[in-house]
Image (cartoon, rainbow, N blue to C red; front, side, top):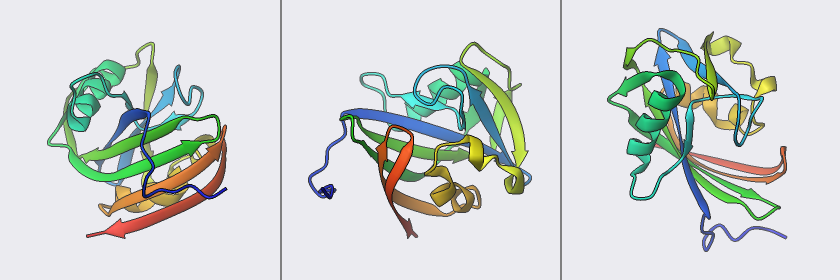
Length: 159
């Protein structure tokens, strides 16, 4: 059955924040939570009263012990899982940060050249939007998943 994205509402709000510098992106080996064992950008669930940007900055600080500077909103991901989870995830990109990326109990940081991003170790949707977002393109995207299997995808590039 097709999802009615017009009336769709999330039951979970989250964020991702990608640090990019000199053709490289700082990713994490996620140790726990949704996507544990995968490589992704730092991020997580919003706390009550937080804006997506506040949550993204907090998550990067918690996961990597760095503070992103001047993050820019790049897009919004909508995920509908057949188990009932409906997640909206705001994606940010920043080029500078303070501190030193440090491994925590949540994440191990690693820099990757854009052309060496390990998509085979990431969520299936990432290859649909991440390469162009890393290069500065803004988007909106909708995905349907059955556990870790992507069933449908739609990405619209804006701006």
